[in-house]
Length: 313
Image (cartoon, rainbow, N blue to C red; front, side, top):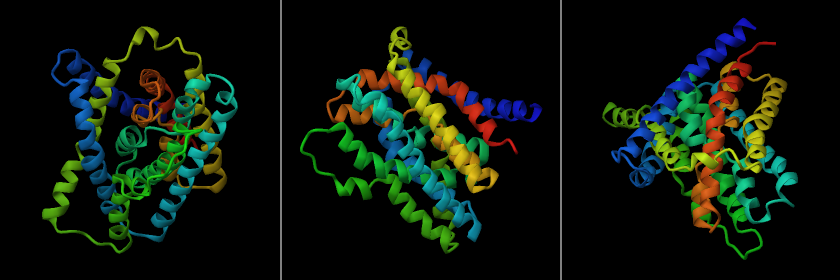
């Protein structure tokens, strides 16, 4: 019990640091120093520049070994499984209720904030090795969001999948670049490696500042009134990560890999929920509230899940 509380306290400290930065973003928005409008423009910088540098840097910071390669493959498989768990777990709850908004609820249940929440947290708790494993979650997220996610948001409509978006997106491209560098132990010249490292350092503070502006523009008075979002949050923050913990224990995955998989699986609903809702004509206000609510609850659940994953049975 003492060890559990120590692990939970350490994880809670890391999560608290992230949310203090988010609070700065909240205040900056209220003072019109760094507003949500600016943050949404900065979101492209995160998506196309910073996050790819984080992923590539994680590959460069991990020395090649057969164990690391197997670990990455396991992390990738676990990430796909975690998303499928979220997809199937949401179906019984939202197939018949809230039909108009069922796609938003299902999307929020299935897809976690891997890029903006899991990667910074993995870096804070586990270092570059944790980011290396969590990057498998980025591949799974992008692959499924641009296939199942698009189908879900357009259910009942005649749609075509954009293969370019599936393959040519920053998350997948950065893995395509970083994976060979890892496999063949290629180290780029310092003049190239140093800028990648410095840009990747922006990920944690910038992501949380952006997140803070989103919270600032959410109607907090009605944030806790929607009962359906409690189901989404229970699936996203409790059911999926605990199931994945059982899978990791069954597979006897190493401690760092287990914790990294748990961080990815326990991440709150993805910001993509809002972006996809806007793109495909769904209720963006509802999507924003779900993301904000699950993110608030994750302040408590993430440290608990990390601490549980670090227990030795």
